[in-house]
Length: 225
Ligand code: C5P
Image 1 (cartoon, protein in one colour):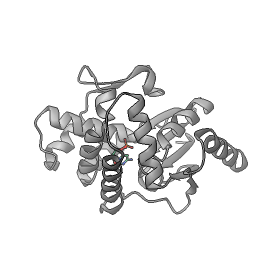
Image 2 (cartoon, helix red, strand yellow; image 1 turned 30 degrees about the vertical axis):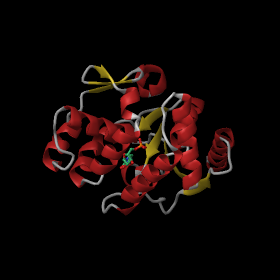
Image 3 (tube, helix red, strand yellow; image 1 turned 135 degrees about the vertical axis):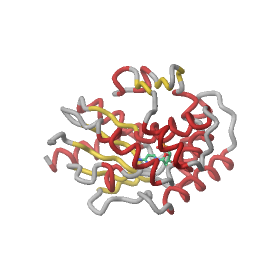
Image 4 (cartoon, protein in one colour; image 1 turned 30 degrees about the horizontal axis):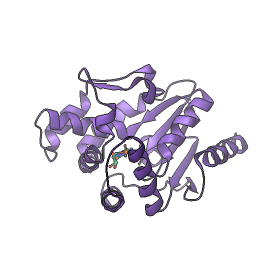
């Protein structure tokens, strides 16, 4: 099919989630938050007492996830995510669920089960896909690929501010350690590790505001059109 796809990959806290949402809104395109699918699969597993190492059962769970992205999944922050009838938007965003997601994301059968689900998001007029392997695996023929990074310290700081604003009490050191552990697991796994696609445009957002990153991306897209 000829649906235009823009991929945005990168580590957690790089700002790619926010960027993907703003870009999808700006273009009037669909949005795929692929990390949410890994988080939802992990949460469903824990809810059902399935071990995070039981690849066979996790594969079945991933393939049959009963999930709704309210508000047409274009802006989950508005409508939220419903898993098996329960609102789980806040639950899945915790570091704890992130760590579970990263664990099951190392399993090839789980990744395979989520593949067609992710590709189904590519619908007219276009898709902005946010994740770790959007440009390298899931949409390897995407029209334009971005890889967003930022220093580990800056990513921890952003996450810290986000959590503080939500009234969640965490230590910066603890966050830094969590982020490093997750980066390590995501970058060193055998299947679809976190890395820029060969043809990805790399943006370091450490010293940029989200608006500056968005402008850069839109500018690049205009020049490539
Ligand atoms: O992006 P987010 O932090 O929500 O992703 C949670 C975890 O899901 C990541 O740490 C990663 O292990 C996994 N993931 C992945 N491939 C993607 C998106 C997320 O392996 N495309």
